[in-house]
Image (cartoon, rainbow, N blue to C red; front, side):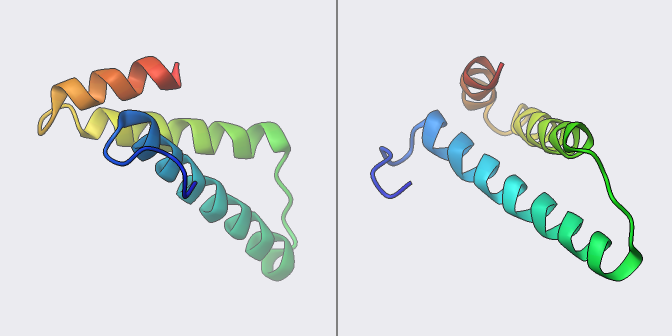
Length: 75
C-alpha cells in the first residue's frame, strides 16, 4: 500500500477496498461475538462489492473521469 503511486485511480481504489474489507471483517467479528450471528463468505463479499461500487459511483458528480477510470479497474 505504501508503494502505490499517489493520486492514481488504482491507489484510491486500493485504499477504498482496504477500508471496506477491514470494516466488514470487523463488523462480522462483532456480529459473531455479540449477536451469535454468522454470515457466509459470499454474503460478506457481496457487501464489500456493493459498497465499493456505490462509492465509485458517488464520485460521478464531482469527478466523472476518476469515477470512470476506477469503475474500469474495479470491473
